[in-house]
Image (cartoon, rainbow, N blue to C red; front, side, top):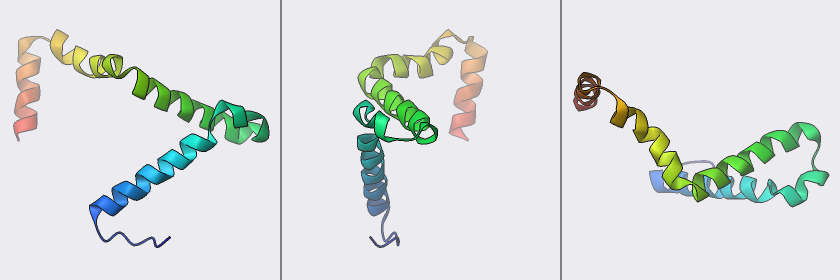
Length: 84
């Protein structure tokens, strides 16, 4: 695999493939084959990916909830910072 990145899409594709390989290797069925030092981060990665995929609504709500519940002046200040 060549490591040069001729386009952003190839970088995205390579990142997606690497993430898919790490996810496939971090399944709980393979946990007895991994040393403890490697198993802990891989198990956390597997759980985080599953939580993100299966609980998309909750994840999105945790991002937007502070904005919805913030006072109007804080929300206006945030919008002003985004527009800059």
